[in-house]
Length: 142
Image 1: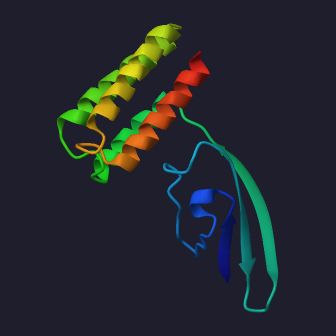
Image 2: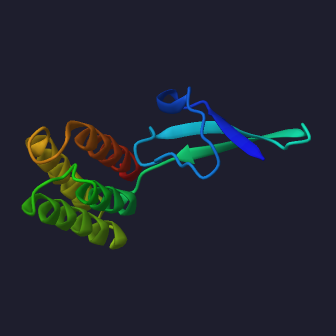
């Protein structure tokens, strides 16, 4: 049996994935996306199924993104992740206590640190994802 997926997301619209292949959703843009999964067997039977999903961001996903970017070397010094994660953890603590303004301020500090290290200890593509996602989270808190 073979299978392929057709995506509407601009970043991977031309993508054709085979059995067992994956697409990193971390760098997929925020918002609505859809894909069509198609399969065919050796007898020539075919089937397709559309699936829609929405990519959002929250403080937890920002923490996960920082950890992924450290793991793959897109954040490449030992001090930067500690500062970023501290700001995100402080933001989450404030939000959990209903202090959204404090959480927003911590997220703005996070954005400032990311922008200050972009192109140096944070790869530009990783910085863009982190800033865009943090801005999205701020928008949900206002």
